[in-house]
Length: 307
Length: 307
Image (cartoon, rainbow over all chains, first blue to last red; front, side):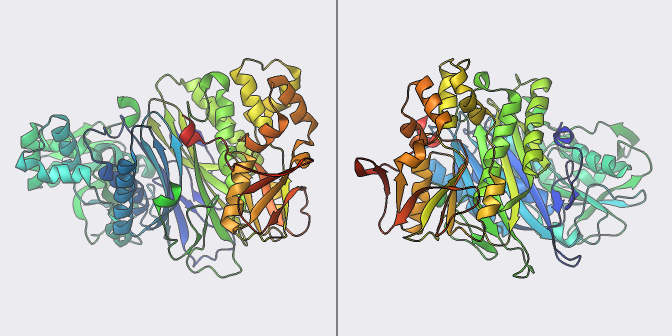
């Protein structure tokens, strides 16, 4: 559906619809000057969060980090942001201030201040964050080559376990502390994104689940993704959290979203990334376990279809 | 409240919170290279429009023009846009396509394509549009001088009359045709905005009503606004529409929003603008009629307080 919004990248726009962010080349800018990377993300109450399960500050923080992660996934440095807030009447001034505080805290960690915004009334809380970043050359989803290794920075599955814990009222279980923090206070991996710039052939951030987002990278690059199950579950915190919520760690790692890990394709290693698989000729996503290989569905948590 | 989002403009940001758009100076850009102007605007069903009163294409068009008008008000040329759409399940594919068509039509008129976006589910339709523009030097709200004349491009009051007509089921009255078009298909005054760049000391677009938005310009520039009633009602189309909806033309002109006229302060005339008043030492907004002068409230239609 996003592709239908607009089909053609106009002059001055290197990458349009379908990547994590648009890549812009302002007029009169010389080849050596930085490119602009630009994204918009929106988090809507009832779809991306429930006000009962998350604090106002966390709502502000999470929405900001989701946008920053799009910039990080392009190998770019976040620069500044605008935010359009929709506030229902029952969100009082104190909650509003808390939302702004969460945003500001995230902005401070990311190094990209909120420099403007818009306020409107509406029936549910929503936060649309648009962010500009800069880079010499953006890392796109396309460009990965068969023969590349697949690398990941950050962790996957923890945030989904944290959300399950909140939904089931299990947030007191100490095995879930890391998972709760992962869902409540995700971090855009800006430094790791910068580290892959100039090295990675292609990259994507994991917002909708590893299988889904790695699948996007594979589709955009016309290669097949092979994921090593063993590498994905080699995370003790994930194992503990999975046990506590009664789900398989591998399932959480493959299909849980909102961790904002970065996945990149490159020949050699990238600082801050660990190897989780490889790229081959072909299409789709393959899971490699000790029992052999099997094709898996490149699906994740789709906010658009789920509710 | 918008001012509370962030107080300080960081390095590389010439104008932050509180103007129609932020003005950015990318790193390594020389003084002769263009500045970036950046805005976000959001239109929410139930606050800014009712789906029963406006077509899907008009929803797309209006939301795009509202953002473009912010860029025009800075004297900048719109460049490109991103849109975050929130869609309720009951908006079908055909309506979605119509919304995109309205956006694309507006984008084509403005000369700023939609190059990316985001889709999410939510209980009501909303469209957050972020737009980048470029200019040599932005026209801000501050900078107007006592002694300047006040100029306006476009018309005011018509869109409000059009909305009244729709709300009262009077859309068949031929006296309201212009008013309906003004509300349904407003136009960002890009050419007029470009004409004032380098001439106007300060400018603002009229989204919330002339008294309110001219008041913002006066406040930001620390001057008093004097509006000539006679100049405001010298609009036969407005007189006809006012009569048809049973409201005073002057009231519609002063307090009706969503026309996206441009108001600028400058010593001499500006191509495409007509004189509607002047600026003096002092504060607040003064209305000058044949009966003399009186202070008026610098209030308009406030979407945030009204509902």
